[in-house]
Length: 82
Ligand code: SF4
Image (cartoon, rainbow, N blue to C red; front, side, top):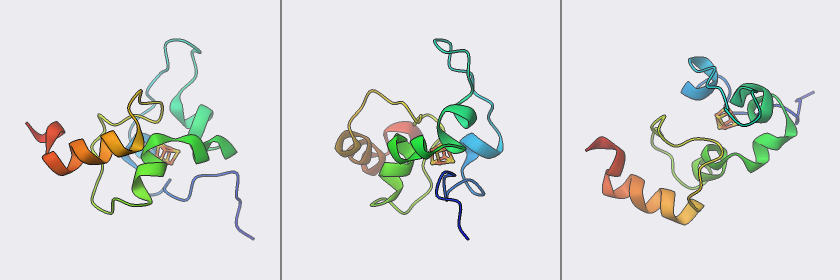
């Protein structure tokens, strides 16, 4: 049975695969805060991936201050490729 606590993007997401990016406020890594928990449902990368199918650069973080719409707009503009 599928574990709904864990993000379904784990295997391909560079934040999970490569990064143990530390969240300076909580001292936890994004993996432990988002990827391995039900809170992945709040991850901005996860939410963006529902309607944006291309790779999402690592600059887009799970707790980005931007809205989903703003992130998608910037992705389409190539904002993080400049
Ligand atoms: S960073 Fe977000 S999209 Fe990537 S694996 Fe973690 S919860 Fe899923």
